[in-house]
Image (cartoon, rainbow, N blue to C red; front, side, top):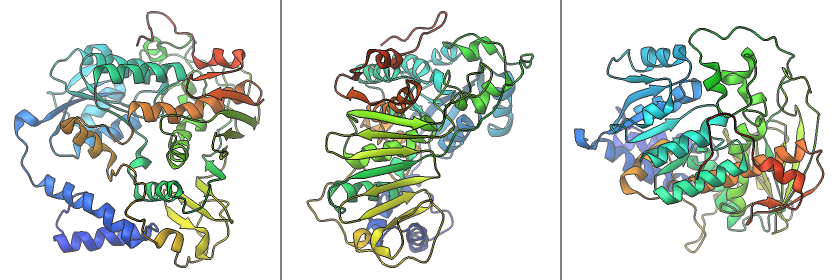
Length: 455
Protein backbone atom coordinates (compact mmCIF):
# COMPACT_ATOMS: atom_id res chain seq x y z
CA UNK A 1 0.00 0.00 0.00
CA UNK A 2 1.42 3.35 -1.02
CA UNK A 3 1.28 6.34 1.32
CA UNK A 4 0.53 8.52 -1.71
CA UNK A 5 0.12 12.14 -0.59
CA UNK A 6 -0.62 11.20 3.03
CA UNK A 7 1.73 11.95 5.91
CA UNK A 8 2.85 8.94 7.93
CA UNK A 9 0.33 9.87 10.61
CA UNK A 10 -2.43 10.28 8.03
CA UNK A 11 -1.50 6.97 6.44
CA UNK A 12 -1.77 5.21 9.81
CA UNK A 13 -5.14 6.80 10.59
CA UNK A 14 -6.55 6.00 7.15
CA UNK A 15 -5.30 2.40 7.27
CA UNK A 16 -6.59 1.71 10.78
CA UNK A 17 -9.99 3.16 9.89
CA UNK A 18 -10.21 0.95 6.82
CA UNK A 19 -9.25 -2.16 8.76
CA UNK A 20 -11.70 -1.37 11.55
CA UNK A 21 -14.50 -1.11 8.97
CA UNK A 22 -13.99 -4.80 8.16
CA UNK A 23 -14.39 -5.78 11.80
CA UNK A 24 -10.70 -6.21 12.59
CA UNK A 25 -9.97 -5.42 16.26
CA UNK A 26 -7.54 -2.60 16.91
CA UNK A 27 -4.79 -4.85 18.28
CA UNK A 28 -4.83 -6.96 15.14
CA UNK A 29 -5.11 -4.01 12.80
CA UNK A 30 -2.02 -2.45 14.35
CA UNK A 31 -0.05 -5.66 13.83
CA UNK A 32 -1.08 -5.77 10.18
CA UNK A 33 -0.20 -2.11 9.74
CA UNK A 34 3.41 -2.73 10.73
CA UNK A 35 3.96 -4.70 7.54
CA UNK A 36 2.31 -2.01 5.44
CA UNK A 37 4.53 0.67 6.93
CA UNK A 38 7.63 -1.38 6.13
CA UNK A 39 6.38 -1.82 2.55
CA UNK A 40 5.67 1.91 2.26
CA UNK A 41 9.21 2.69 3.39
CA UNK A 42 10.59 0.22 0.84
CA UNK A 43 8.72 2.02 -1.95
CA UNK A 44 10.82 5.13 -1.32
CA UNK A 45 14.07 3.33 -2.11
CA UNK A 46 15.32 3.53 -5.71
CA UNK A 47 15.59 0.35 -7.77
CA UNK A 48 18.64 -0.14 -9.94
CA UNK A 49 18.02 -1.19 -13.53
CA UNK A 50 19.96 -4.38 -12.84
CA UNK A 51 17.49 -5.26 -10.07
CA UNK A 52 14.36 -4.79 -12.17
CA UNK A 53 12.33 -7.99 -12.45
CA UNK A 54 11.46 -8.80 -16.07
CA UNK A 55 8.07 -10.50 -16.12
CA UNK A 56 6.06 -12.32 -18.78
CA UNK A 57 2.29 -12.80 -18.75
CA UNK A 58 0.83 -16.08 -20.04
CA UNK A 59 -2.92 -15.79 -20.54
CA UNK A 60 -4.24 -12.35 -21.47
CA UNK A 61 -7.85 -12.69 -20.34
CA UNK A 62 -9.42 -10.61 -17.61
CA UNK A 63 -7.80 -12.46 -14.71
CA UNK A 64 -4.39 -12.53 -16.35
CA UNK A 65 -4.47 -8.84 -17.16
CA UNK A 66 -5.65 -8.13 -13.63
CA UNK A 67 -2.68 -9.83 -11.99
CA UNK A 68 -0.37 -8.20 -14.55
CA UNK A 69 -1.64 -4.72 -13.63
CA UNK A 70 -1.20 -5.63 -9.98
CA UNK A 71 2.41 -6.66 -10.57
CA UNK A 72 3.10 -3.56 -12.66
CA UNK A 73 1.91 -1.36 -9.80
CA UNK A 74 4.80 -2.62 -7.68
CA UNK A 75 8.21 -1.04 -7.77
CA UNK A 76 10.92 -2.79 -9.75
CA UNK A 77 8.64 -4.80 -12.07
CA UNK A 78 8.70 -4.55 -15.85
CA UNK A 79 6.42 -6.60 -18.11
CA UNK A 80 8.44 -7.47 -21.19
CA UNK A 81 6.31 -10.15 -22.88
CA UNK A 82 2.77 -11.46 -23.16
CA UNK A 83 1.37 -14.71 -24.53
CA UNK A 84 -2.08 -15.89 -25.54
CA UNK A 85 -3.45 -18.29 -28.14
CA UNK A 86 -5.98 -15.59 -29.02
CA UNK A 87 -4.24 -12.89 -31.04
CA UNK A 88 -7.02 -10.41 -30.30
CA UNK A 89 -6.55 -10.78 -26.56
CA UNK A 90 -2.81 -10.39 -26.52
CA UNK A 91 -2.94 -7.37 -28.83
CA UNK A 92 -5.63 -5.75 -26.70
CA UNK A 93 -3.55 -6.40 -23.58
CA UNK A 94 -0.55 -4.62 -25.08
CA UNK A 95 -2.61 -1.77 -26.51
CA UNK A 96 -4.62 -1.01 -23.38
CA UNK A 97 -2.52 -2.14 -20.42
CA UNK A 98 0.99 -1.66 -21.81
CA UNK A 99 0.29 1.55 -23.76
CA UNK A 100 1.02 -0.08 -27.09
CA UNK A 101 4.69 -0.59 -26.26
CA UNK A 102 6.60 -2.04 -29.18
CA UNK A 103 9.23 -3.29 -26.75
CA UNK A 104 6.81 -5.86 -25.35
CA UNK A 105 7.21 -9.17 -27.18
CA UNK A 106 4.07 -11.09 -28.12
CA UNK A 107 3.82 -14.88 -28.35
CA UNK A 108 1.18 -17.43 -29.25
CA UNK A 109 3.16 -20.37 -27.83
CA UNK A 110 4.03 -20.14 -24.12
CA UNK A 111 7.09 -22.33 -24.66
CA UNK A 112 8.67 -19.64 -26.80
CA UNK A 113 8.06 -17.00 -24.13
CA UNK A 114 9.63 -19.29 -21.53
CA UNK A 115 12.68 -19.77 -23.76
CA UNK A 116 13.32 -16.02 -23.50
CA UNK A 117 16.28 -15.79 -21.13
CA UNK A 118 15.59 -12.10 -20.44
CA UNK A 119 12.45 -13.08 -18.49
CA UNK A 120 12.95 -13.78 -14.77
CA UNK A 121 9.40 -14.62 -13.70
CA UNK A 122 5.97 -15.34 -15.14
CA UNK A 123 2.35 -14.69 -14.29
CA UNK A 124 0.02 -17.53 -15.32
CA UNK A 125 -3.56 -16.49 -16.02
CA UNK A 126 -4.57 -19.21 -18.48
CA UNK A 127 -7.67 -21.41 -18.19
CA UNK A 128 -7.27 -24.04 -15.47
CA UNK A 129 -6.44 -26.95 -17.76
CA UNK A 130 -3.18 -25.24 -18.74
CA UNK A 131 -1.90 -24.21 -15.31
CA UNK A 132 0.18 -27.27 -14.48
CA UNK A 133 1.85 -27.74 -17.87
CA UNK A 134 2.80 -24.07 -18.13
CA UNK A 135 4.00 -23.83 -14.52
CA UNK A 136 6.16 -26.95 -14.78
CA UNK A 137 7.81 -25.75 -17.99
CA UNK A 138 8.36 -22.32 -16.47
CA UNK A 139 10.09 -23.69 -13.38
CA UNK A 140 12.27 -26.02 -15.41
CA UNK A 141 13.38 -23.02 -17.47
CA UNK A 142 14.39 -21.09 -14.37
CA UNK A 143 11.38 -18.79 -13.95
CA UNK A 144 9.70 -17.94 -10.67
CA UNK A 145 5.93 -18.37 -10.92
CA UNK A 146 2.75 -16.61 -9.83
CA UNK A 147 -0.07 -18.94 -10.88
CA UNK A 148 -3.73 -18.08 -10.63
CA UNK A 149 -5.92 -20.39 -8.60
CA UNK A 150 -7.10 -23.09 -8.85
CA UNK A 151 -3.59 -24.44 -9.19
CA UNK A 152 -4.54 -27.54 -11.19
CA UNK A 153 -7.22 -29.45 -13.04
CA UNK A 154 -6.43 -32.76 -11.31
CA UNK A 155 -4.74 -34.06 -8.17
CA UNK A 156 -2.06 -35.82 -10.22
CA UNK A 157 -1.19 -32.48 -11.81
CA UNK A 158 -0.80 -30.97 -8.36
CA UNK A 159 1.59 -33.69 -7.24
CA UNK A 160 3.70 -33.04 -10.34
CA UNK A 161 3.79 -29.26 -9.79
CA UNK A 162 4.84 -29.72 -6.15
CA UNK A 163 7.60 -32.16 -7.12
CA UNK A 164 9.05 -29.78 -9.72
CA UNK A 165 8.78 -26.78 -7.40
CA UNK A 166 10.81 -28.63 -4.76
CA UNK A 167 13.38 -29.87 -7.27
CA UNK A 168 13.94 -26.51 -8.97
CA UNK A 169 13.60 -24.34 -5.83
CA UNK A 170 11.69 -21.71 -7.78
CA UNK A 171 9.60 -19.18 -5.87
CA UNK A 172 5.95 -20.09 -6.37
CA UNK A 173 2.85 -18.17 -5.34
CA UNK A 174 -0.68 -19.48 -5.91
CA UNK A 175 -3.22 -16.70 -6.33
CA UNK A 176 -5.29 -17.62 -3.26
CA UNK A 177 -5.05 -14.04 -2.08
CA UNK A 178 -7.23 -14.43 1.01
CA UNK A 179 -4.04 -15.65 2.70
CA UNK A 180 -2.94 -12.01 2.50
CA UNK A 181 -6.16 -10.49 3.84
CA UNK A 182 -6.31 -9.65 7.56
CA UNK A 183 -9.82 -10.88 8.43
CA UNK A 184 -9.15 -14.36 7.03
CA UNK A 185 -5.82 -14.70 8.82
CA UNK A 186 -7.40 -13.50 12.08
CA UNK A 187 -10.22 -16.05 11.80
CA UNK A 188 -7.72 -18.85 11.20
CA UNK A 189 -5.42 -17.76 14.03
CA UNK A 190 -8.31 -17.63 16.48
CA UNK A 191 -9.47 -21.08 15.36
CA UNK A 192 -5.96 -22.48 15.66
CA UNK A 193 -5.63 -21.07 19.18
CA UNK A 194 -8.87 -22.62 20.48
CA UNK A 195 -10.71 -19.32 20.81
CA UNK A 196 -13.83 -21.24 19.78
CA UNK A 197 -12.88 -24.43 21.60
CA UNK A 198 -12.59 -27.55 19.48
CA UNK A 199 -13.62 -26.84 15.89
CA UNK A 200 -16.67 -28.90 15.00
CA UNK A 201 -17.73 -27.63 11.57
CA UNK A 202 -16.52 -25.19 8.97
CA UNK A 203 -19.03 -24.24 6.30
CA UNK A 204 -17.63 -22.82 3.06
CA UNK A 205 -20.20 -21.04 0.95
CA UNK A 206 -19.06 -20.67 -2.64
CA UNK A 207 -22.09 -20.14 -4.88
CA UNK A 208 -23.87 -22.27 -7.48
CA UNK A 209 -22.99 -23.07 -11.07
CA UNK A 210 -24.98 -21.72 -14.02
CA UNK A 211 -27.10 -23.90 -16.28
CA UNK A 212 -26.90 -23.43 -20.01
CA UNK A 213 -27.08 -25.14 -23.37
CA UNK A 214 -27.11 -26.90 -25.60
CA UNK A 215 -25.00 -24.27 -27.31
CA UNK A 216 -24.45 -24.17 -31.07
CA UNK A 217 -21.22 -25.08 -32.79
CA UNK A 218 -19.82 -22.11 -34.70
CA UNK A 219 -16.82 -20.97 -36.71
CA UNK A 220 -13.62 -20.38 -34.79
CA UNK A 221 -13.09 -16.61 -34.48
CA UNK A 222 -10.26 -15.16 -36.52
CA UNK A 223 -7.09 -14.95 -34.47
CA UNK A 224 -7.96 -17.77 -32.04
CA UNK A 225 -5.91 -20.97 -32.23
CA UNK A 226 -8.69 -23.26 -31.00
CA UNK A 227 -6.66 -26.47 -31.14
CA UNK A 228 -3.93 -24.87 -29.01
CA UNK A 229 -6.55 -23.50 -26.59
CA UNK A 230 -7.86 -27.06 -26.09
CA UNK A 231 -4.30 -28.33 -25.70
CA UNK A 232 -4.27 -31.50 -23.54
CA UNK A 233 -8.09 -31.75 -23.33
CA UNK A 234 -10.31 -33.70 -25.77
CA UNK A 235 -10.64 -32.29 -29.27
CA UNK A 236 -14.12 -30.85 -29.83
CA UNK A 237 -15.68 -28.42 -32.25
CA UNK A 238 -15.68 -24.75 -31.29
CA UNK A 239 -18.50 -23.61 -29.04
CA UNK A 240 -18.23 -20.01 -27.88
CA UNK A 241 -19.42 -20.86 -24.36
CA UNK A 242 -16.57 -23.33 -23.85
CA UNK A 243 -13.94 -20.64 -24.26
CA UNK A 244 -12.58 -17.68 -22.32
CA UNK A 245 -14.47 -16.89 -19.09
CA UNK A 246 -17.16 -19.56 -19.60
CA UNK A 247 -14.64 -22.42 -19.53
CA UNK A 248 -15.27 -22.54 -15.75
CA UNK A 249 -18.57 -24.39 -16.15
CA UNK A 250 -17.13 -27.41 -18.00
CA UNK A 251 -15.42 -30.29 -16.22
CA UNK A 252 -13.05 -30.72 -19.16
CA UNK A 253 -11.37 -27.41 -18.31
CA UNK A 254 -12.26 -26.58 -14.70
CA UNK A 255 -14.46 -27.62 -11.78
CA UNK A 256 -17.09 -24.91 -11.63
CA UNK A 257 -17.52 -23.02 -8.36
CA UNK A 258 -15.98 -25.95 -6.48
CA UNK A 259 -12.56 -25.03 -7.85
CA UNK A 260 -13.23 -21.36 -8.69
CA UNK A 261 -14.41 -20.08 -5.27
CA UNK A 262 -13.63 -23.34 -3.51
CA UNK A 263 -9.93 -22.71 -4.07
CA UNK A 264 -10.39 -19.61 -1.90
CA UNK A 265 -12.74 -20.70 0.87
CA UNK A 266 -11.70 -24.34 1.18
CA UNK A 267 -8.16 -23.00 1.40
CA UNK A 268 -9.24 -20.93 4.42
CA UNK A 269 -10.80 -24.04 5.99
CA UNK A 270 -7.56 -25.97 5.50
CA UNK A 271 -5.62 -23.08 7.04
CA UNK A 272 -7.95 -22.86 10.04
CA UNK A 273 -7.60 -26.61 10.68
CA UNK A 274 -3.81 -26.66 10.30
CA UNK A 275 -4.04 -28.92 7.25
CA UNK A 276 -1.73 -27.05 4.86
CA UNK A 277 0.20 -30.23 4.06
CA UNK A 278 -2.60 -32.73 4.52
CA UNK A 279 -6.35 -32.88 4.05
CA UNK A 280 -9.59 -34.71 4.80
CA UNK A 281 -9.95 -38.46 5.27
CA UNK A 282 -13.41 -38.79 3.73
CA UNK A 283 -15.78 -37.06 1.33
CA UNK A 284 -19.44 -37.48 0.41
CA UNK A 285 -21.88 -35.27 -1.45
CA UNK A 286 -25.30 -34.53 -2.80
CA UNK A 287 -26.01 -32.38 -5.81
CA UNK A 288 -28.29 -31.50 -8.68
CA UNK A 289 -27.33 -33.57 -11.69
CA UNK A 290 -25.90 -31.58 -14.60
CA UNK A 291 -26.90 -31.82 -18.23
CA UNK A 292 -25.59 -34.82 -20.18
CA UNK A 293 -25.67 -32.91 -23.46
CA UNK A 294 -22.19 -32.62 -24.94
CA UNK A 295 -22.59 -28.92 -25.68
CA UNK A 296 -24.13 -27.83 -22.38
CA UNK A 297 -22.50 -26.68 -19.15
CA UNK A 298 -21.83 -29.86 -17.16
CA UNK A 299 -20.75 -28.79 -13.67
CA UNK A 300 -23.29 -29.70 -10.98
CA UNK A 301 -25.54 -26.62 -10.61
CA UNK A 302 -26.08 -27.02 -6.86
CA UNK A 303 -24.26 -29.20 -4.35
CA UNK A 304 -23.32 -29.90 -0.76
CA UNK A 305 -20.02 -31.65 -0.14
CA UNK A 306 -19.05 -32.90 3.31
CA UNK A 307 -15.44 -33.63 4.22
CA UNK A 308 -14.39 -35.49 7.35
CA UNK A 309 -11.05 -34.80 9.09
CA UNK A 310 -9.05 -36.94 11.48
CA UNK A 311 -9.65 -34.41 14.27
CA UNK A 312 -13.39 -35.03 14.03
CA UNK A 313 -14.02 -31.68 12.37
CA UNK A 314 -16.18 -31.47 9.27
CA UNK A 315 -15.96 -29.05 6.36
CA UNK A 316 -19.24 -28.61 4.50
CA UNK A 317 -18.94 -26.87 1.14
CA UNK A 318 -22.25 -25.45 -0.06
CA UNK A 319 -23.53 -23.80 -3.22
CA UNK A 320 -24.74 -20.68 -1.42
CA UNK A 321 -23.39 -17.14 -1.16
CA UNK A 322 -20.59 -16.48 0.17
CA UNK A 323 -18.14 -16.76 3.06
CA UNK A 324 -16.67 -19.07 5.70
CA UNK A 325 -18.49 -19.98 8.94
CA UNK A 326 -16.26 -21.57 11.59
CA UNK A 327 -18.17 -23.24 14.43
CA UNK A 328 -16.73 -24.47 17.70
CA UNK A 329 -18.05 -25.49 21.10
CA UNK A 330 -20.80 -23.83 23.17
CA UNK A 331 -22.39 -22.28 20.08
CA UNK A 332 -19.34 -20.10 19.43
CA UNK A 333 -18.72 -19.14 15.83
CA UNK A 334 -16.78 -16.76 13.59
CA UNK A 335 -18.00 -15.72 10.15
CA UNK A 336 -15.53 -14.22 7.68
CA UNK A 337 -15.95 -13.06 4.10
CA UNK A 338 -14.44 -10.40 1.87
CA UNK A 339 -16.57 -7.77 3.52
CA UNK A 340 -15.27 -8.44 7.02
CA UNK A 341 -15.43 -10.62 10.11
CA UNK A 342 -17.95 -11.10 12.92
CA UNK A 343 -18.37 -13.39 15.92
CA UNK A 344 -21.11 -15.04 17.97
CA UNK A 345 -20.69 -12.74 20.98
CA UNK A 346 -21.61 -9.57 19.07
CA UNK A 347 -25.36 -9.93 19.53
CA UNK A 348 -26.06 -11.29 16.05
CA UNK A 349 -27.74 -14.49 14.97
CA UNK A 350 -25.64 -17.08 13.20
CA UNK A 351 -25.41 -15.79 9.61
CA UNK A 352 -27.14 -17.51 6.74
CA UNK A 353 -25.58 -15.24 4.11
CA UNK A 354 -22.94 -12.53 3.90
CA UNK A 355 -25.51 -9.73 3.80
CA UNK A 356 -25.27 -7.13 6.54
CA UNK A 357 -27.62 -7.24 9.52
CA UNK A 358 -28.07 -5.17 12.62
CA UNK A 359 -25.26 -3.14 14.12
CA UNK A 360 -22.80 -5.41 15.92
CA UNK A 361 -21.61 -5.03 19.48
CA UNK A 362 -18.10 -5.50 20.80
CA UNK A 363 -16.57 -8.97 20.68
CA UNK A 364 -14.32 -10.56 23.26
CA UNK A 365 -13.74 -13.47 20.87
CA UNK A 366 -12.23 -11.10 18.33
CA UNK A 367 -11.06 -8.28 20.55
CA UNK A 368 -8.94 -10.08 23.14
CA UNK A 369 -5.32 -10.17 21.90
CA UNK A 370 -3.60 -13.50 21.47
CA UNK A 371 -0.98 -14.35 24.07
CA UNK A 372 2.75 -14.26 23.48
CA UNK A 373 2.89 -18.06 23.16
CA UNK A 374 0.01 -18.25 20.69
CA UNK A 375 0.28 -19.97 17.33
CA UNK A 376 0.78 -17.22 14.76
CA UNK A 377 0.37 -17.67 11.03
CA UNK A 378 2.38 -16.41 8.07
CA UNK A 379 1.93 -12.63 7.80
CA UNK A 380 1.36 -11.23 4.33
CA UNK A 381 -0.60 -8.04 3.74
CA UNK A 382 -0.24 -7.95 -0.05
CA UNK A 383 -0.28 -11.16 -2.06
CA UNK A 384 1.59 -9.92 -5.12
CA UNK A 385 4.14 -8.03 -3.05
CA UNK A 386 4.71 -11.14 -0.96
CA UNK A 387 5.68 -13.03 -4.12
CA UNK A 388 7.99 -10.24 -5.25
CA UNK A 389 9.62 -9.98 -1.83
CA UNK A 390 10.18 -13.73 -1.72
CA UNK A 391 11.82 -13.67 -5.14
CA UNK A 392 14.43 -11.37 -3.57
CA UNK A 393 14.86 -13.30 -0.33
CA UNK A 394 14.28 -16.81 -1.80
CA UNK A 395 12.02 -17.59 1.16
CA UNK A 396 8.69 -19.44 0.75
CA UNK A 397 5.58 -17.44 -0.11
CA UNK A 398 2.37 -17.47 1.89
CA UNK A 399 0.71 -19.83 -0.62
CA UNK A 400 3.34 -22.18 -1.99
CA UNK A 401 2.78 -24.87 -4.60
CA UNK A 402 2.29 -27.44 -1.80
CA UNK A 403 -0.31 -25.29 -0.03
CA UNK A 404 -2.13 -24.53 -3.27
CA UNK A 405 -2.10 -28.20 -4.25
CA UNK A 406 -3.51 -29.37 -0.93
CA UNK A 407 -6.26 -26.76 -0.96
CA UNK A 408 -7.40 -27.43 -4.49
CA UNK A 409 -7.20 -31.17 -3.79
CA UNK A 410 -10.07 -30.65 -1.37
CA UNK A 411 -12.03 -29.11 -4.25
CA UNK A 412 -11.12 -31.94 -6.63
CA UNK A 413 -12.21 -34.52 -4.06
CA UNK A 414 -15.60 -32.85 -3.95
CA UNK A 415 -15.94 -32.87 -7.72
CA UNK A 416 -14.94 -36.53 -7.87
CA UNK A 417 -17.51 -37.37 -5.20
CA UNK A 418 -20.25 -35.59 -7.13
CA UNK A 419 -19.27 -37.20 -10.41
CA UNK A 420 -19.22 -40.71 -8.89
CA UNK A 421 -22.69 -40.41 -7.40
CA UNK A 422 -22.02 -38.85 -4.02
CA UNK A 423 -21.28 -42.01 -2.04
CA UNK A 424 -18.89 -41.74 0.88
CA UNK A 425 -15.28 -42.12 -0.25
CA UNK A 426 -12.36 -42.81 2.07
CA UNK A 427 -9.27 -40.71 1.27
CA UNK A 428 -5.68 -41.16 2.40
CA UNK A 429 -4.11 -37.67 2.40
CA UNK A 430 -0.58 -39.06 2.87
CA UNK A 431 -0.73 -41.49 -0.06
CA UNK A 432 -3.16 -39.21 -1.93
CA UNK A 433 -5.38 -42.11 -2.94
CA UNK A 434 -8.93 -43.36 -2.39
CA UNK A 435 -9.85 -46.82 -1.21
CA UNK A 436 -12.23 -46.84 -4.22
CA UNK A 437 -10.56 -47.76 -7.53
CA UNK A 438 -13.22 -46.08 -9.68
CA UNK A 439 -12.57 -42.82 -7.84
CA UNK A 440 -8.79 -43.28 -8.16
CA UNK A 441 -9.16 -43.29 -11.93
CA UNK A 442 -10.39 -39.70 -11.67
CA UNK A 443 -7.24 -38.44 -9.96
CA UNK A 444 -5.82 -37.85 -13.42
CA UNK A 445 -7.17 -37.18 -16.91
CA UNK A 446 -6.13 -38.45 -20.36
CA UNK A 447 -3.79 -36.01 -22.09
CA UNK A 448 -4.20 -35.41 -25.81
CA UNK A 449 -1.59 -35.13 -28.53
CA UNK A 450 1.96 -33.95 -27.94
CA UNK A 451 1.34 -32.80 -24.36
CA UNK A 452 2.73 -34.72 -21.39
CA UNK A 453 2.61 -34.25 -17.63
CA UNK A 454 6.22 -34.75 -16.63
CA UNK A 455 7.60 -34.24 -13.17
